[in-house]
Amino acid sequence: MSEYLEAEDRPQKPDSRDWKQRFPVMIATLLWGALGGWLFSLAGIPLAWMIGSMFFTAGIAVAGVRLKGPGKGRAIMITVLGVMLGSAFTPDVLEQASSWILSIAVLIVFVVVITVFLSWAFQKFGKMTKFEAVLSATPGGFGEMILIAESYGVDVRAISLIHATRVMFTVMLIPLYFRIFEGYQPPEISPMGSVTEMGLQDGLILAACAFVGYVVAKRLKLPAAALLGPMVVSAIVHFMGFTTAKPPGELVNLAQLVIGTNVGCRFVGVERRQLINPVGIGIIGAAVTLGMALGAASLLHNITQLDYHALWISFAPGGLAEMTLISLAMGIDTAFVSTHHIVRILFIVMAISVVSRMLFGPPKHEEGD
Image (cartoon, rainbow, N blue to C red; front, side, top):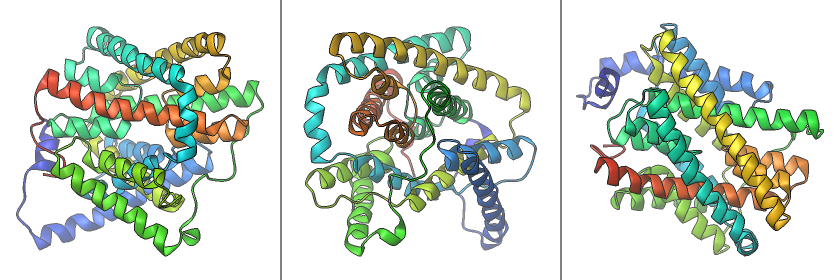
């Protein structure tokens, strides 16, 4: 365990003077993250508030600026993302999913193959440990891999940077390709609603999904409880038709800001030369994954006659919201794309928790302890 993580995770006695010193630094850190998220959103970069805040805070952390992340408060924001993922499980989507069995089965095989191949390559050529390589090789699960690594007391800096590079490379490259070759233009509307549009009842239901899901998942000692628990409860609630609401865009952006800022703060004390290897690994891993996704999409298109572009977007290791936005703007079946990405995320979260325990034993400490 790194000195940084030991200092962050070691129980501390309450000290009002220490809190008064750290609180302004934490606020300043969040403001730095907000500046990065805002600038990235103006530039039209996908996952702007997470990627922007992460890169801004990571950059000034490497430059030696004093930072303090939101710490355990990130768990609250992670529950928001869990509820958002679960809200995609509507009856209509699940009914259509029955006709996509082959492509979903191939997707699961694809995830396993790419994870095994990249974990081997990262160990052999990237000189990574087996644990770091496995968590870095998954074609998805940025937040989940970080949470699992933390539960084992592992320094998440390299893992988080590799996944951040993968996400950013993927979600920037695909829109660029479609913008140049397919006439794609970034959508001006968000598929998520606004705080002003949400009713009190829907708001209470979503809040209950986050709270109940997190508490139950923690009690069951599930990994990534803050994400997995709310996601499952939200999926059940939306499938049963109790609500069709999604977390408002403002809250999702705030969650991205807090999570991204917290990850950026992990780079406090990291030297510039230490960034070269993770970024290079992330780019190479993303390029290999996208190339294999292209091949899988071509094969499935020839067998099933499903839309080639929809298949490629569905297999690409980008974010659910961003891939859904791209499919919406291109007039491609959004339910098809979102369902495949939901399956990918669910499978990765479930499988990696089992694989981690099989290969490395139980976590050293549970999230939030």
